[in-house]
Image (cartoon, rainbow over all chains, first blue to last red; front, side, top):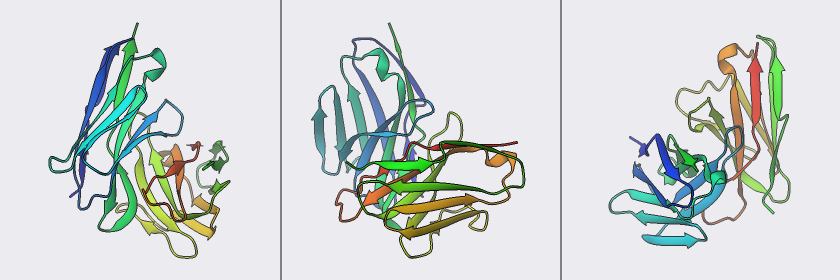
Length: 112
Length: 117
């Protein structure tokens, strides 16, 4: 079956670093996405990994290990506006190459 | 670029009525559009995949006769919730994949909040 796991909630302090982990077991794989979603809004794209390794984009970095079925999103220099849900999503299923399935999301709370 | 719009942004209707939600790609052609539903404090659940000019592919457990999807052009897909009931109240989000795009990235619309009384 298909399974994408990530922690339900996390809390971190403004200015600190936080790592959100995601593990997946899927019928196919053609890339892993991270999205940010503020309450009541649509998700916004953060990163895409298809090869193993670390992709850095400003304060956000995303890592992928395909052999381990594992990814993480690293947020540095946390700001209050980073309080949001972070969604791990996988694409490339045997039933549909373009379909994306989302994990349950991690609600990140930033405290002053 | 890569903007997706949805209309309406919110709708309140009486139980038993039908509601149509439009999803448009404004500055690109979308071969495939996706419809998601999100309940409070939950993640996005894929309902169906919509391909231009062909029938939609529904995920397991989603009633195709209740959630009618029409993808009439490369820039427009519609979702009609037929005979809506209070349990259909949810946040409906569409996304679109650009023609020829290689990385499977989807661009999301702003969502439609449906409340059924």
